[in-house]
Length: 534
Image (cartoon, rainbow, N blue to C red; front, side):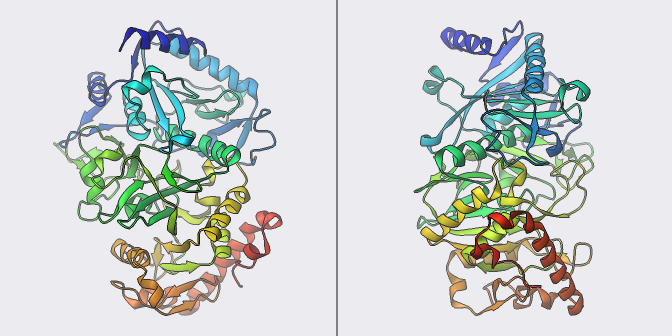
């Protein structure tokens, strides 16, 4: 590192109180970070060269331990609730001092400068300070990477301080437990303590963007993947972790924009990130060749185990967690576009993992239905994505990403509805969950069928087929689709006990209505008319 760059870094760190006696590893290359991890016995290389690590006590996010500082910036803007939990600024300051003291007296730590937002008009400068080298590798993989010239003038706008050895005292520091993630919009700082799970770094920056971009730039931020066809037709895939965002956007016939976080501006869709963070449980080369081939040198694999007596990863082993993951740069995907920017979408897909087995595998939505479904965010949390989730659990996650949305869901939904109407975008609801019965009775819809339905929608093939209307939800679903058995398109036909299906459909519909009640005062007549008919 040039002397002037190191001097600038030291000067900038001193502004937050860090005057380290430690060895500061700045902007290390992936190979350096891998070697440092191996040297400290914190990881192992797989037979493909990927670095395999264990994130420790936490193998998923802990949403109950995420807080936003209550201050003049957030007081009247944030939608305060059990997810967006307020914390006093005094507690934030105390924990920040504890974090700073930790780095001041550490023997070593790692600093990574990076960007978020591929559209340079909205670029965010980020500095990530971590306790371990593999956490810095994760930041390298997941965020946009500055050039040498960028670093000469780099000044961080947001700071992330992460150290799993820094623990909170819940009795005196305002947290629920010893682990914490705290976001201060006034100080533009994120504190992550007590957890080594890398996803906390990624999702805390996502939460920041979900506040800053819609609130200050009138730009829709989205928990979605996106790709673009050869004709420039962009497709967006909304959904919670485990619903298929990464898998379904990885299409050899289309260019990948990104797999998880995007912005929708007036004339573009762009990736927030520079990498992918894919689930690997049950990974098979024939089903997901892009992800499989990306697990090579430079990739960071989390919480997997090896086949006995080898360094070959056993992707079917969930003994540590169901939430096994791999992070890698977008450049590891052969058909990823760079920069990760494309035009506005032609098709939008809402991915829902329906553990009730009620929803059609694909349905076409009106704008009103799309806004209703977007605000509802129905899906099932699948095993491992959060602490304590062992099997699919029905949930309603507003905007298909409620844990990361600081503003009121209606704020995002209004922006979405306007874009759908103004740009005449077709919206589809895709059930990647169960058919023929509820979870435990029915079977999960085959990935090959889901791909075939999405491809048919993208190619316009579903505009020429007959549709039927679901009696409870009012969705229009196709009665035929190339490459898909006609029987599964109507979910009622897949249940042996048709009366049981009818009961479950009404039960699920009632859950929608009851959940949406909290939004009803702010919803338009068009949205309210899209409610299920019980």
